[in-house]
Image 1 (cartoon, rainbow, N blue to C red):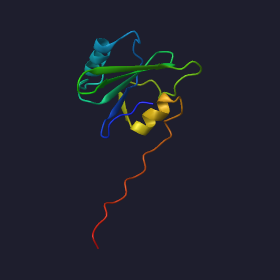
Image 2 (cartoon, helix red, strand yellow):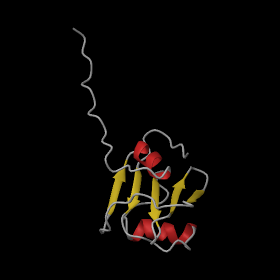
Image 3 (cartoon, helix red, strand yellow):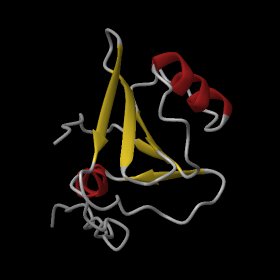
Length: 117
């Protein structure tokens, strides 16, 4: 399980990328395809063409981290292949990494701020 700090945004590249890419290649994908800064402290998630492999790129403040996971059976549940980037929650990321269907989970609405009566 990947633990990410509160406030960290998770971005999923909707198009498959070449999974042979490492730090520099995926950083270039973040800049060119996602129009984002790989050193922003947010997590960027990439999928392979077959759907059973993912990589995550993350700047932790001291260096880039590259995480990878390949399922031995089955495939990860992905959104349909479209151009662009999808933002997901940390809970959805946890479900995706576990191989579960994360697409049907919705964030509950935030309760209103309490007021002094």
